[in-house]
Amino acid sequence: MENDETHIIHRILKGETSLYEYFLDKYSQQVFILIIRIVENQEDAEELTQDTFLKAFEHLSSFKAESSFSTWIYRIAYNTAISATRKRKQELIVMDSAMLMNISDQQIDDALNDESGERVGRDIQ
Image (cartoon, rainbow, N blue to C red; front, side, top):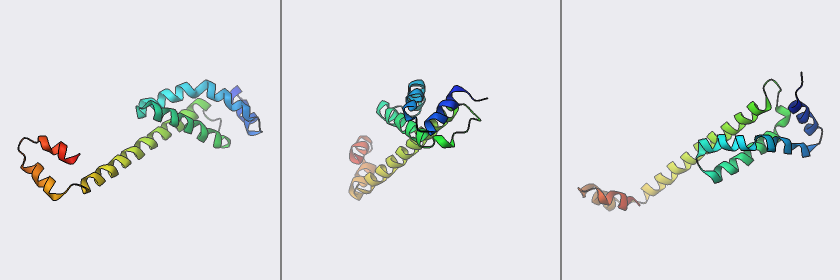
């Protein structure tokens, strides 16, 4: 049996794109909450929420009514947030590596010789 959301999806796929608003109104807050719990940053969560809906609407024709639309969009949101988190961690690792390459041998020797360890953080920065 076809539910209301499946019917709306069929109408969107036939060109009634104004019906996208139904899904935005119904699911954007829940998608945002899911994403912010993962990324822990409001601006990133807002951007990733938009990305989630863009991905969902771009791939709406691949939605199969085997599960609910909410399950489908929450999975897209989760995957989008996890991918962004992984990408950010990789960027931080690259930045840390680049920072380490800019430290001179003398700074490393000085930091290692400083028994108090107070200069270690300062020298690395």
